[in-house]
Amino acid sequence: MNSHDLRLMANKIRRRDVQAVFEAGAGHIGGEMSVIDLLTALYFDIMSVNPDNPNDPKRDRLVLSKGHTALALYIVLSEKGFIAKDEISTFLKPHSRLNGHPNRTKVPGVETNTGPLGHGLPIAVGMAKAAQMNDEPWRTFVITGDGEMQEGSNWEAIMAASQFKLDNLTLIIDHNRLQQGARLVDTNDVAPLRPKLEAFGWAVEEINGHNMDEICSVLAADKVVKGKPKCIVAHTNKGQGISFMSDDVAWHHKVPNEQQYKQAMAELEEASQ
Ligand SMILES: Cc1ncc(C[n+]2csc(CCOP(=O)(O)OP(=O)(O)O)c2C)c(N)n1
Ligand SMILES: [Mg+2]
Image 1 (cartoon, rainbow, N blue to C red):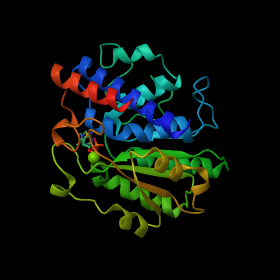
Image 2: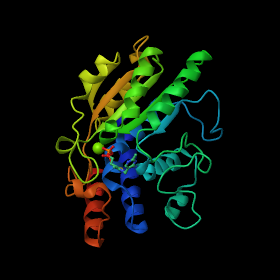
Image 3: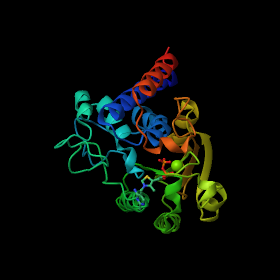
Image 4: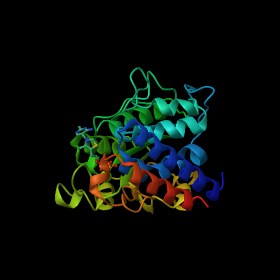
């Protein structure tokens, strides 16, 4: 897909996400809007995955460590063909397999159960280590929230990845400057992230996490730095694409009312023209 088509796809995924949150009466809309461009680029440009064979041993792996934004992943997986598009309307309903956090035993294409923050990166380090030990070429990607980087388990995993020289591992930090109920700067400010990761022996790049060209370029296989794990600090906005949600901590898990829903859809519709 070229970057124009990737942008249209991300816009479509945003609209489906807003509709699903509105209909379900729950979700993590802010963090979903912030991660959708990253997920779209990964699944439609970067990763080698096969919806007809979700467990292909040679597939690339994506761990969505910020599992509270599962809905965004479900919609990407439905657009990619892993699950039916009309299944999205079951999100959070009784007996649906599309729970508030992703479950690998239920949903094809989900690599790891996540939700408790701070677990995805350690698991991804294990995946990348397995590929390295077996001399396999597949890559492991993991997306964490920036608030999530306050979890100590991440920093143990960061040390291990560097020690093991896991250059097949890419950590993408969705750096939207907000966590639940507060700004990072007012709680436990992990920024700036680049010098910390570099001090731990990682190769670090900073990008605009809503610019498709930048995302695709930085994630391309030819950007791998031999012997070093890679961290992409993706500068993003919580609520990206919707004016009244953007950069507002209230929209971590607030649900739009009917008027807000209509306005959000109209803004996204306009951006797709
Ligand atoms: C270990 C753990 N503590 C608390 C929570 C509750 N929780 C869910 S999302 C969230 C905030 C996450 O902020 P961030 O990582 O910045 O994600 P984003 O801004 O992308 O939504 C919290 C505290 C959790 N899921 N896991
Ligand atoms: Mg955040």
